[in-house]
Image (cartoon, rainbow, N blue to C red; front, side):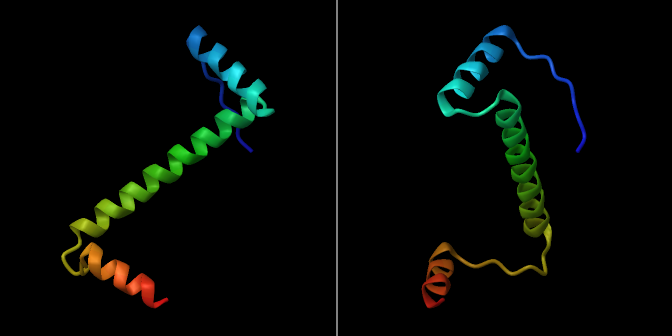
Length: 72
């Protein structure tokens, strides 16, 4: 596992400690989860943009998507 050192504004650090206490999580764990979600969302967005830019990738309407999902 790789470690990073970050600086947080005092109000952000205070809020993070409060959230950690309320959720019975450590601040480190909350930060790790937040970064993991950020990275996953970024990767998903990048893949979506690549697919939108690919003229050979067919698009379907949201209605067609719902129909297909209902078939499964």
